[in-house]
Each structure stands twice: as structure tokens, then as C-alpha cells.
Image: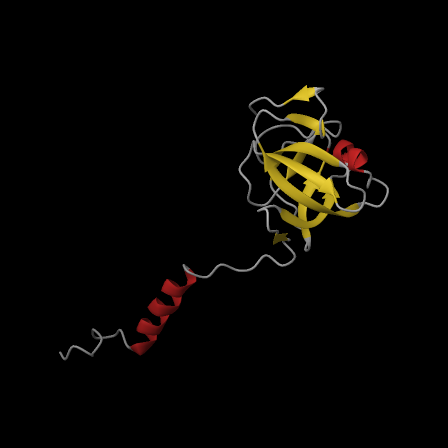
Length: 154
């Protein structure tokens, strides 16, 4: 058998299939509308909020969705990460804890609780443009600068 030949029964199609499968490991599909990184390392994009019908349902991290809390769904940030979300239209900010996965709607970067949307001033509109910045684990949850709900381990 010459070095360029394939084993009996395993022709060029097999080699092509192997090359294709190996290439899949290096392919990272772009998340359409997943926001963009800004100069400071934060992410900007569109925020939305959970329907109140999700109240009490179990999140991906195992916690219960509390519409009155300051929690969020993000596609990639680790559970427990605290994120400052700033509404780019009015400058209001809140700190939320990532405890769910999503949003799974094209163009969205974060899903917030109804309380967080209310504090950011976009509950009536349903969506707004935001900037996300990871903050230290000792930051207080809620409107930026508030001390009413101190972050604890999830």
C-alpha cells in the first residue's frame, strides 16, 4: 500500500468527512445581535425583561424567578456574576445578579426582572439600549448606589 492510499473501503469521502468534522471544533457561530464590546470591556445592546408569567419558575441556576428582585439572564456570564446595567436612553443604572440563561431572542443581550426594568425606566417600552459592566461581588443589588439588598452567594 502506498502512503497516499486509504485503507481498503475508506476512500476520499472518508477523509473529507474527517476533515469536515475536525473543522467543526474550530467553528464558533456568531450570535446574531448579541451586542458588542465597548472600549471599557463592557457589552452594549438591547435589554428586555421577563414576563410576570415566569414568576416562581425555576431558572437555569436552580433559583426561583422573583419579579420583584434584581436578577438577569445572560447567554455567557457565569451564574452569580453581578452586572451593572445602564439604560443608555436615560442614564439610570441597576445592579443585577445573573442566575439564568438567555435571552434567546435575536438582538437581545440581557433579560431582566420586571423590577429591574421598572428601575431602569423601560417597563412600558419593553426594550431599551443598555451597557453591561461586570461589578465586584460585594456590590449592592438594585438601583446603582442603593444599599437595600446586599449581594449574597447564590
